[in-house]
Length: 122
Image (cartoon, rainbow, N blue to C red; front, side):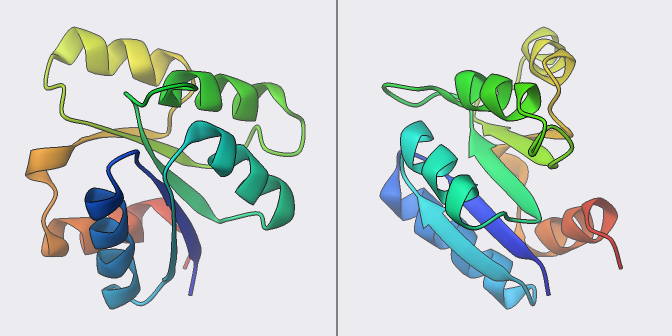
C-alpha cells in the first residue's frame, strides 16, 4: 500500500481523488494548497504526489520546482493534474520534471488504478 498525496485547491476534487486512491488500495491524503503540500512532504514523505497545476498562491509548477530542487525529494514521483488539454502545455509541464501529466476529465477509476500500478513499485 502506497501513500499518495493529492493536492488540489478544489476541496471536492481533492477529497474525491483521495477516495479513489483509497479504493485502489492505497492511503490517500488531501491538501488544498501548495504550501500545505510542501509541509505535508516535510512531515510525511509520500510515495507519489498527484498535483494540480493551477492553484492560487503557490501553483503546482512552483511546488514541483521546489520538490525537484531539494535533494530529499528530487526523485519523488509527481503527477501533474490539470484541466488543460493542450499538448504543448503538457510537454512544458513534463519538461519541468513531472513524472506524468493527467487531464482531469479523462481519469476514471479503472484508469486511475492502471496508472497507479505503472507509477508505483510492486
